[in-house]
Image 1: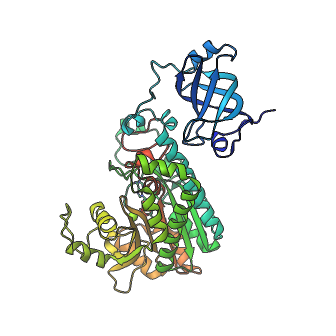
Image 2: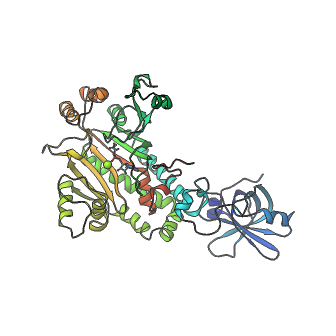
Image 3: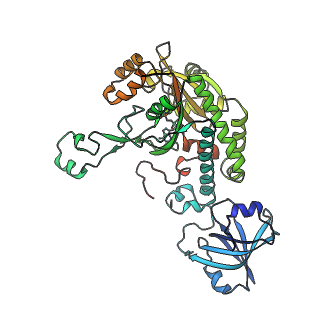
Length: 464
Ligand code: 4AD
Ligand code: MG
């Protein structure tokens, strides 16, 4: 029996005279006088496998007519040394089975460059293009690296819920989860909605972060991480925001803001190294076709220490710069994307960890510093991206946490369990959240976040 192999293995290890079988989709066809070339891609690699079809194949004419770009097939044959540049072997076909034809008149992926905007309108087919294919393989490698990194360190992967009753970030960007009959409600116009009749007996949401539950788990297992989808109903149509995105959130007991920064830096270095080692062809492709800084950027991340500054230092650096910013800079402002990118791209030319932000611009759970004005927060700002990681040491002191919750007008009843953790064996602890798509953007140089997730969810867009 001939074993079906993936094209990546054949291109890396295939030897002349081996009998092999592959399955995939035709990328291109070239007909010559008495034979034809087709290029097959099976999603395992950027490169295609070249297949030679000789006239002596049974039903040669009929097969050639059907093998248009996009059609699907099995090919069996013998590997031969390839005279063509850039490939060691090609496949001399002796058996072809076609599964699905593909009409060249209507198939949208013809052999030309398509814009990413256009490709987003054919989300069901765009995975068959070079760029989206490379993105998805790099994304997969990043995910693998995330698990390896934390598993090697003995972190427990905890599965935090997607449906939650609290707003972790307090930004009010929540999607409600309901099974109330919305048509009836709007028809009755009774004013306030009575969520006690809803599925959970109260208002519930899609989670914006698994952090609060990760904190619970870290109070039993010390070091944990979550890796899953999170949701934000923020109506910002930018190249860095999605309504549904994946977040990696480690949480460590007996850890302070310093340890948190160290872990985040080590983590990013590990993931970059892993992808460089495991997806060299794909990264080379991004370097050539998407952004000339991809490989330098990866080396820079792996080999240089990140810059570390406080928020107050960041503000004074921004005030001193000659760059004209759209948003005014003064102590107390939330850093805007233009500020973040100036610091990372222009000034330091590498990732910058900014710590100790004003408490008024950060979430309720961050640990209050002794100055009473700032909290032990840390954001990592990356060149071309801006904020890629947001984290903090958590407020482990019950009395101070209660004051902060009151100050921010949050209903403490919803957080009784969170407060309980500070009553029963509280410890200093810290963690962070990495936006997984921003990491993939950072790694590949892709401009738009919609092109680094298979099925982007953004305002007015939930196709596929
Ligand atoms: O800074 P954020 O809001 O922090 C948290 O959610 C914390 N609970 C994390 C923690 O400490 N466990 O979000 C973390 C990261 C951001 O730095 C950014 O990379 C990404 O999530 N992010 C988004 N990515 C894509 N689309 C959005 N709308 C995003 N909002 C945040
Ligand atoms: Mg943040």
